[in-house]
Amino acid sequence: MPSTSMDLVQSLFADWAHGDYSSVAWADPEIEFTVADGPAPGTWTGVAGMIKGYGEVMNAWEDYGGEAEGYRELGDGRVLVLIRLTGRGKTSGMALGQMQPKAAGIFEVRDGRVTTINLYWDRERALADLDLS
Image (cartoon, rainbow, N blue to C red; front, side, top):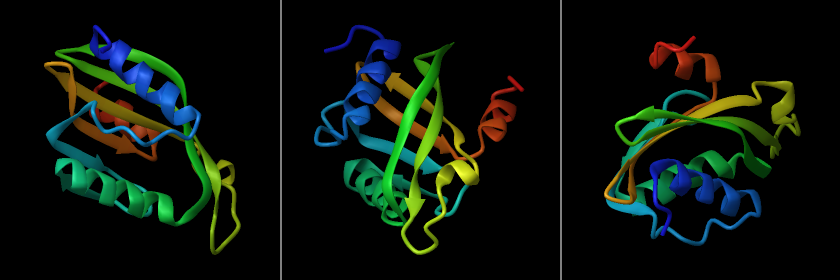
């Protein structure tokens, strides 16, 4: 098990970069998953809710993925991840790179598990919400 919040979040992105979304052992059973903006905003609670919410995001895209471009420890178990989105719209065929490829995620870790994920399609909005812009 990763020893710090940063280690845990980096290990998640390493798995996800290889398309491995199979494990949810890292998630607190009552995790709060929020998509703050973009085409499918909403908040879901619990592991089943997170899977449902992320599925709604992924369903609109072919080859959907997010590549970590950088990490920043924010304190209090929070980690900011700068993300570059990839994929193509299933209906439109439009590449995410033509829209808003610069996203961000804020992960909160307590007792070795992720308790909160806030995803932002608009990185600048995430930075503004954190007073980092």
